[in-house]
Length: 495
Image (cartoon, rainbow, N blue to C red; front, side, top):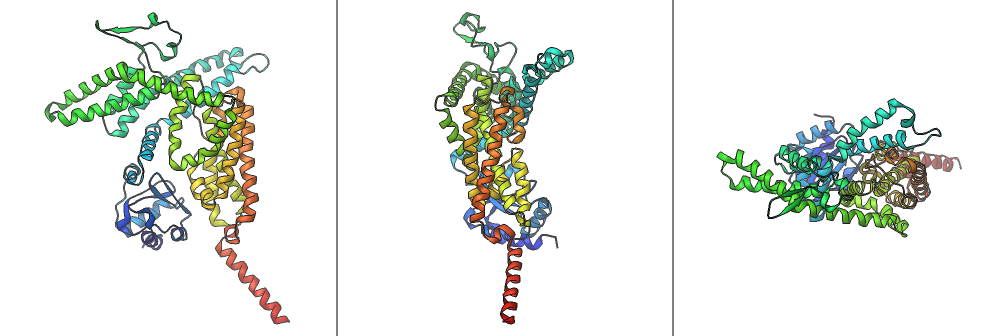
């Protein structure tokens, strides 16, 4: 009998039994279920199970927070239930049965960008560091102007920065083929053809005269030889075109010649479609989207745009629609040399963590809630909001709303001051390292607002709304009530 056998039996019953489980897996701290009928899950009952620290539902998955012992709990659960666990990727795939079409689209975008985000974070930090040593005048010039060594470092780091941002289409095309289960090397090659040195660099297109743009001359038609460095939508369209073609040729081609025919025609036609049709169309779409967002963030009513976005970003996380911002941010960086949008996202994450910090203060004598709230607060300040939002803030309601208010005010300060980030960064307190140097001071002020306002609102409201059980835990509340009854009994007996 395992350590969590009894708890596993309770959980199996309360999620609706074996027949209601389509798939189960686990991550670092949570059990992840795909339920055939999510309404059958007894959430209050599950949260009372010993060892369970909370629950939430996201992206079609019902997730049960266990903590560091999740692996042992998971092993006992699979033994009790007789259900063979699957990988997290299989769970995500199965979870689509509980998602609407819009959620499925957003989930697909998220899965495309997820493997790329670490590189974008590194790139943002590198650009931030280069700005510090290369742009800030410390009184007698910049660090780069005063030191041969730092000038060399500044130049060397651009080798990495260029690889990340200019060659981004390579990563996008690879990620799409990886997600869709087609040949990844063909995706890499397709991405390389979008950023080849034979083409006019995308950053040089705007200033080039029409007759200075190189062309492929086919006699009956000419096609501009333009690169798509840092372009997101052209790369996404190209990647999915390649996936469609490869799957199409795999269906119609005899296996005996598929090794030759499928990759040849798939790649050739995808490259042609990308440069002749999809690339120019994607460039226009990307430019329209980024120009529209940039116009809203730099208009005379940018404070209104910022306030609405800052207030509603956290609810967007719940729906999964927030994943679209990665593509928009990347396009903004390509078109305008930075993004005004991403700093608001970092501030929203900080605000959610600060609301949890308020709950930690209020529930400092409730040991069970601290097991969830302290790790959730730390992860939120480092850019991972789900444990904080679903494990704490949404559970009580008012902390979530307090964070939305703090995020709204901080976003107005950020956008109103023109704060711009070099790129997507760590979406929490370390995010300040990705902010362009001239805006770091005002962004620090916005961060203080995102910390102070949610914390104070949560504490003030929480003192009125939280019960003794919320503040101290059920066991301590019962013990306190027992002591009170004893005192009353003694007083009555004495009289």
